[in-house]
Image 1 (cartoon, rainbow, N blue to C red):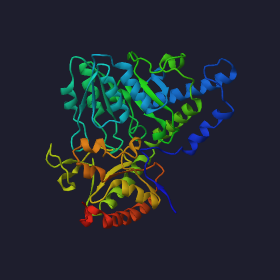
Image 2: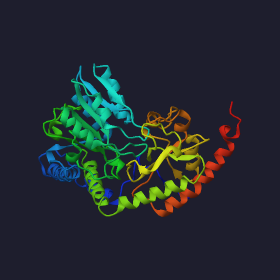
Image 3: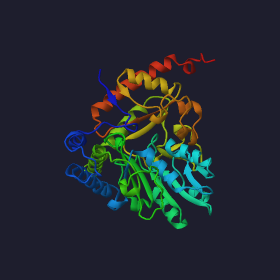
Image 4: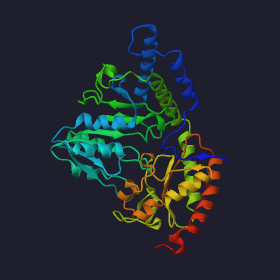
Length: 405
């Protein structure tokens, strides 16, 4: 049976070039990058080269790149490393759990958090961020691209607000890295987190931009690794793989790969929306500003919300999203009902609920996210099996058949 993977926002496979770049550092050049002998210096040189690539990726100085274990560590570091009792923290209600749970923990240490809600389109209004700022506000954290809807957030406007008010600004760029033009100087942030495995790199490795002069405390202490900003022996193969993935991602933004991906996503989305009782979460602005827009027809199709090229989030009336995920898996298609970090959760997506969807529609929503290697044949296959699965599930659904309760 043919298998098509459309859950790239959960993770991505290594590209062959990434695997080949990493291979020597598992066996031949296995040295500890902190050792002064030849084996150690070979590893150290590889880390230095990778740091230079990541500095180009972020558009920052080499010394502002800190390697870590991934997005969760980067997000946690921004919060635990900057906030102190009595501080005020601003984030949004659609963030990844690495931010939301960290904020909840900081509440136990005297840090109050304001969670700014999105508009029904999934966009955060920068003026809501501005209104939330207080004299004791120390940090704002916002994601670049939402992991469930793909909606791109107005980070540049928030960066300007942070600069004008003297507040530190962190961006969780895990889902945006490698999919949009990336420039921490333009974003105006002090801190930025990324993860390799979301852009065809290895799992367990990430990087963080830390602007020079940002008084952040290390989450891990021990050795003097990463200029004393992150203790622990460097994961040299992972660091090399991250840099190669970032290098390929930068090329993909220039060679038409992202544009091709957007066209595939749009064709996939349009094909699925031919089914009755479907709509997109986070695709357009409402016809009436401020209106909840719970139904597809209330959105302005001429006023799209900016999204990353590979992601669509679609609701299907009269069925359960989890049942559709399983049905499609049995037909060889991997999709998601939301964030991979909440797989198996019985509660509906906190992102979709924050956007104003009711529990029924939130539970009836699926995320389809394409790999950069996705093909027209992949889309053709998905458009063949999705209608079959939806038709079958609706035929036996207690909601659709009137047998519920």
